[in-house]
Amino acid sequence: MRTTILPVILLVLSLIAPGAALAAQPPAPAPQGISQHAPDRVLVKFRPGTAATEIGKAHSRASGHAIRTIPGIDVQVVQVPAGTVAGSVALYEANPNVQYAEPDYYRLLRIPSEDPGPAPAGGSLFEEQWYLNNTGQWHTAKRTTIFGSSFTKQKGKRDADIDAPEGWDITTGVATTDPASRNSAKIAVLDSGVSCAELDLQNKCLEQVNVVQDYVPKSEQLWDGVDGDVIGHGTFVASEAAADTDNAVGIAGAGWNTGFGSFKVCYQELVTDGVNLFFVGLCPVSASADAIMRASTDRFAADGTTLLRSQYHVITMSYGSDSIAPDGTITPTTPSSAECDAVQAAWDLSLIH
Image (tube, rainbow, N blue to C red; front, side, top):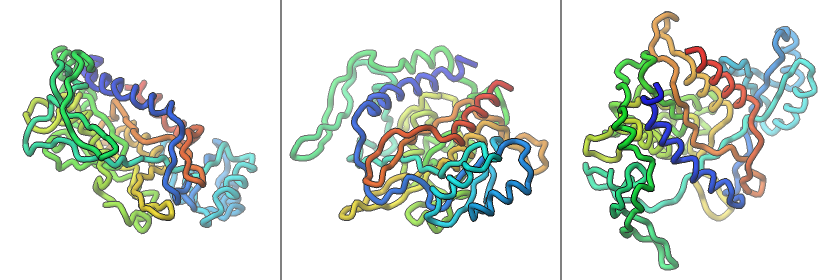
């Protein structure tokens, strides 16, 4: 099984270093108008064995209404009056029956403003993917000066890559023709959704699940396609991991035969700094934790016995664990207890199979 997911592991390692470098930079200013959390939702976990009557009393004191329970970790998503999140969290935390309470924090998905790169219609971009296989080939590079941005060519540094072809020589994995199979590598992409109709992705997409719609009303997703990937970030992540390889079209996914599932946990929002307008991606912790649990468990048909899809082997979450201050400054935040519970539960479930 290790050799089956070798290309995927290499991909993950290749993405860690750039992220670490960015984390070391000073906090970047964010657009104004972004709240740190949902204005009317909190996450509450009661201690095991708490009577239903006591749970009802706790909700009543906080004017809360449980709208959903995140499966597998027993965290209740509670609707509270808009603008009362901080007070509601304090009321729940003061209750001895409550293990923890927290706002439904927003993870931030920054949408970079980039010039379009090379995209020849129907052509192969493998030579541009120097990080997969760097033979010192010439590839496109973006140059920015005081006069603007432009694309030019630069020569790569030989072997400055993740040795993807060498990994493929060892194995290309087992094609995921049956999502219920446990011996073929599958990646759960938790992101802004994935456009599975893309030519390079349609044969690899196992399922599309819109998780965020269970927590954020459609009326609050006015700038998002709700079911699609308006942002494009999730489609990019899925492509890097699992796009069709060796088909002479588009890019090559690191996981040659790896299938993926799309779990939409982020949506596009329009905010302002008072002068300019910006699009950002907002990823509620409630949807994030729920998607982790869905991806790490088997999915059955309505009869409860027919296995439709076994648990995923890899979960990728390419959105920031950041705190957004009222002045727009982005800084690292402490982990969400609900998200930590979900990650731990996913790890424990991975040991079963």
